[in-house]
Structures are given as C-alpha cells and as structure tokens.
Length: 518
Image (cartoon, rainbow, N blue to C red; front, side):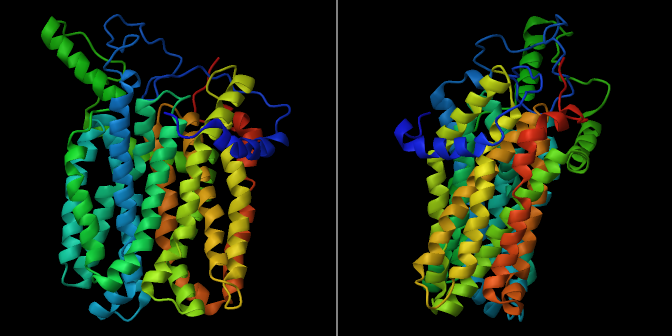
C-alpha cells in the first residue's frame, strides 16, 4: 500500500537517520531467523521444524487460506474495518469529556473528578479487558472475541445514553470499555496475522493513527455537541456509530493462523478420514479452559519479568496518561486563560489531531529505515531494534512539545501558540506507539497478543489515572510549573529507546520468553 510519495517522506527519513547516527557503530544482531508466522502465541519453539511430523497440517506455499496470501483488496477491507473500530472506540472515550460540567450538573455531583470518571472508567475497561480477551483470541480465534464483544459494546453505549443515575452511567461506561478492549489489545497482533514482518509497518501505522484520531476528534466535537445538542448526544453518537459498524464487524474473516489451521485440520480429518491429522499448536493433554487460565497470566509475567516490556510500557503509559490529562487540562486552561466556552476549548485539541495526521507521512520512512537496518545488522532477518528509530525521535520531540505547552498558555501569548504545541506531541505519540508496539511484537514473535495486552494494561492504567488529578494539579501548582513537572518526567524517560537500541540484543539473549536461535 503506497501511503505517500518518496519525496514527501524524505524529511522524515532524514530525521530518523540523524537519530541513528550516534548509535550506529558496533551493533550486531541477535541470530534471528526470518519468522513468517507471526500469527500469535504458540508453545512451539521457532527452532522446531514445521514438517517434522507428517501428520501435521500446515500452510503450503502460496496457500490462499493463509492470511499472508490473501488478495490486497481483502486485506484492505479487513484493515479498514479494524481501523474504524479503533476510531469509534477511542472517540467513545473522549467525546464525553467536554460534557463533564453538564453531566455534573444533571446528576447533581459536587466534584469534577467524579464526573470525569465517565472518561476514566471507559479507559479502565480497556486496560482490564485484554487480560482475558487477548488469551481468548489466541485459543478460540479473533472473531469469537471481536464479534460478540462488539455487539455487547453497542448495548452498553445505549445503556449509558439512557442512564438515569450517575451509578448506572458509570457502570455502563466501565462495561462498554471492557467490551471495546479487543480492538485496543488485539489489533496489533491482527495486523501481524495479515502482513509479513517486513510489510506490517504501514498497516500498523494506520491502526494506530485512526485510533488516536478518534481520541482527538471526540474531544474536538464533544464540546460543540454538548453545547448545542445536549450532553446525552455525546453518548448517542458512539452508540449510533458502533451500531452502524456492526455489519462490517460481523463479516470479518478469521485472521488467527492457529485457528485457521485447526479448522483446516478438522475439515481434512472429516473429509479424508485421517483421524491422526493435527496442527503443531494442538495440545491434547490439556483442556482449553486450563490453557486459557494459564494464558491469562502471560501478560503479567511479561510485565514482571521482561525489562523490554515493562520499560516500553512505562514510557507509553506516561505519554498516554499525559494525552488524557490534556483532555481535562485543555478544557480548564483555555476556559480560564482565554475565556473560551466548552465548544472552543475542545477544539483546542485540534493541534494534537493535526500531529497525528502528519504521522501518516512517517510510516513509509519508518518502514524503509527498518528494512535498511535489518539488512545491515540482521542479514535480512528479523531485527527488532530496527523498529526503534521512530521512538528515538519521538522521545526527543515529546518533551519539547510539553515544555512548549507549559510556558505558552498565557494571556499575553496568542492562543494559536499553545495549540500548535500539540502538533509535535500528536506526531511523536504515534511514532512512539508504533515503534514500541512493533518492537515488543518482534521481540516476542510467538506471543504478540500477550505482549500487546501487557503494554496495553500499563498504558491504559496511566490514561485512566492522569485525568483524575488534572484539576488538582493545575489548581495547586503554578500552571507553567505543573506542565513542566510532567515534561521533566518525559525527559527522564527519553533514554529508553536509545538504551534498547544499543543493548536490546543482549537483553533479549537473557530473556525467558524471547526466542533464542542457534
């Protein structure tokens, strides 16, 4: 898929090459094979020959059932469906934020933080849902998770719009977040299901960008909807959008390699009368319920035992937390400093939205840098550290953006200046997300969904918690220093991608879960 011309992407190539220069020398790749099957968690070691057992059912070369071999049009339709799901889910979380004051008044709630729980509990649902939906998708297939959970997500969106008490409203928001969580946690693994490792960059960027644009659009339009149509329409809008998209979700093809092969083996046993046929993923000694219970622990194990996972999750969590803190901070500061109403205060988020859109043009450049580094350091094989240059660039521009915003929100400074500070933040956030998510997937290629669930848990817990202390932070600390405190934390986290770029191969060689090759 061509996203931009090479001339358009050239500035981003240059910026990433600058980030590479200092660490380029003396780098060697871990001895990775060219793993084509990124189809999800598997107990099989990548060293195990695929066809050692003649009764194993596997994909043949060019097999049309293998999602890697699907026609481009089929892949694109599925990818657009997932992108739209991500857009709707993230819009659902933020569109309510500008209506916080109206919700507070309607339900007669005294504290603003309680009304903000409408946003925070939705994000909490995203964080907790993947702990069971990610392993479930690895055992029973993606569609058996995506389709029923999307339908229930619609029902709780309707329930939130019809709620007659604050308790019912908050309960529906939490449950809608839980049932929306598959698209947050499983979408990166689904991209790896459909695209080979050297081609997955642009599709993964699309998934990330549409999801992040949903957050920005929700904040921008939520104020105007609340102001002119009433706050309940900030809840009816996602209910309507998710309902209209149900048909597309129901027609999604199964992408999970293990599930497709299991169905193929079952069909061949029935049609050919060969009861011994099986897949390399079959485990007849344990029921699926036991495997599922064990798999639930895997994201927590990755977080606890793998420095790559928990440090990437920490950086992503902080950046996501600041984004959701800004949802409340923009409303507070632009009302207080520039005397804007709810609609205009939400529209101030457009700077971040523009930055997210501009990140589209970085996708081809990031993929070219990855291929270049894989050829140089990995001899064309998988080279996870080749995913890190965009994160290195992001962790430079994000702190700059945060200092810019902190010290430009003043009455003697035109309102466009703080809004423009959001452009590099949105741009950097996309780069960081895609870089770290691809990096962790490449480091743990047989457990991509579990790695995604682990990073999602950390990231979304931050996103849930940060908006709750935004009012207190900006009320108790000078506006400029409140933002600067956050920016200094970002500076402290900035070395993470540089450390992994230099020492990642050594860290992976000592990992319990990252594959080792001889």
